[in-house]
Picture (tube, rainbow, N blue to C red):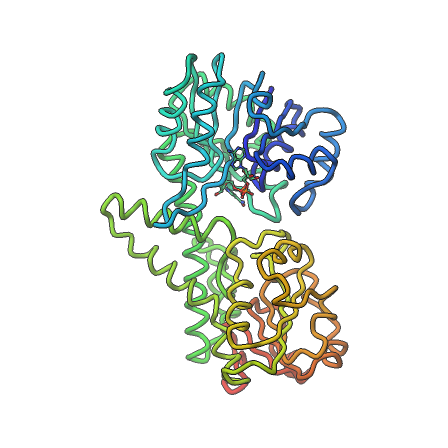
Length: 440
Ligand code: NAD
């Protein structure tokens, strides 16, 4: 099939590359000329495990091309996928301006029947708006399909190639037949392609993300309570995770969720609810809990060092909002750094992939270390923000020698409390016994 993907970011680039991998002819389109220039020059603008191999192969074999020209990019494409950004508006609802502007342009450019597929996360009713925007200019027949994307950054290629399920919202048989051909190679093992109406498909994506965000916030509250009443969240997590109704995943407490999806999607769903005059109380609590959780380590840092941190240096391990990505959108690291900077602290940071992305935001406010050992040189404390695998088994002797004092604030519970005690570290983590040295 001949496919155009509009928007070549984390979703669009993975989508386009994986469709090329299953033999389709794919053109990726983006208004960011620098990004397209990089992609045409053989360079990936994002870090995503395994994407490099598929990108190189499909580009070399001529199935994957890139352009900034919308008309050229969609020429001949039976399917046009929209992987455009839907950032939060001032009031928290999803900003549809990118999607609707492109839809209007598409209306002018379509010359024969096409299926326009929305992969972006969009509020319920957007398929109708896209249809109207295209129809306002179109002289031909077309269908609009909602196909929300469930890939996770850090696992995007494997999630896309072997999805647990594919959700497709369409009321058109013609579009459905085309989508069946498109998706068949990805569900050969029998995972379901779930067909529904467009509105339900749009809602499914928000319902999934808000549920996962709720699970994280719930566990963070359990962890906070465990600390106060002498229970250990690690035991509690294992105890409840073995219940199939609950499941093992998304039960790890920490310093809050971030990223380009959960924060904005929970907000957008809350906004949708309030527009429908429905009071979705759980969502408000999820957002409030997460906001507080991002800075949960700060009072503990103050308890140890005082509120004036002017003569203190902190090493921040991890900047990306989660491991295996370079994405720093809404990353907890940025909130922690801001709070520490406000108290006058000096900061050195290290992240395996996200350093270049924070430089435009933080400039020379922080020191960029070459590796995680360099970051701790003369530091008064380490603050662990992202659970990159490489932080899990460091050389603690080397760390202790380099630091001014042996203090670790661990926002991701990477180490055994007992081991830290044996090694003589002042070690604080989230929701575990012995987390606070003065507690049980
Ligand atoms: P992104 O910001 O990484 O990429 C969007 C791209 O669209 C950018 O490269 C931008 O330059 C381009 N763009 C903007 N306006 C354009 C236009 N008029 N024409 C062509 N290109 C244009 O965003 P993303 O993370 O890929 O997310 C895209 C959508 O997918 C969002 O709705 C998001 O909520 C959803 N989503 C994201 C993820 C994820 O993990 N990132 C997962 C599932 C769904």
